[in-house]
Image (cartoon, rainbow, N blue to C red; front, top):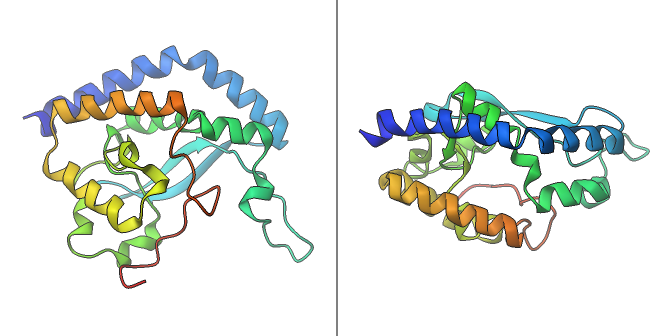
Length: 202
């Protein structure tokens, strides 16, 4: 009952309310990033959602498109702007995903949507993360985020998929707010972005 009917309704209502409350912050962040990055402040990318259906996720762009003399993008840490670091550390870059929730591509809580290139790399069990809509935040995000291994993240994702409930969603949302406030687990130990998933045998 909750998973099929109540959760989608709550997602839509909560996403609209939160987006309206954050609208002034949304516009300020958009304008400052437009100036800092000298262009489009939004980042869109194809991601697999429920049942592996592809959709376009939208976030605030925190890195420039600066390239070296050979035409290759510079390393992440060199492209991450000063304001971009602040936006990422405070999770302001996630605000536009509320539009994905309103549209119905995502949920407030669920496994994070990853790259389509990872789909062939998942084990049969790991594929179960796509039995539900991906979320802005999830059980893995409040239990380590980028600080834990891929295998551990997937275990946490499956734990959530198998135990979806209002109580668990509420707990995750509360823990998310706490982590945003203290800015914990934003980056991995070796990169300003998480290391790519290379399969279960690596």
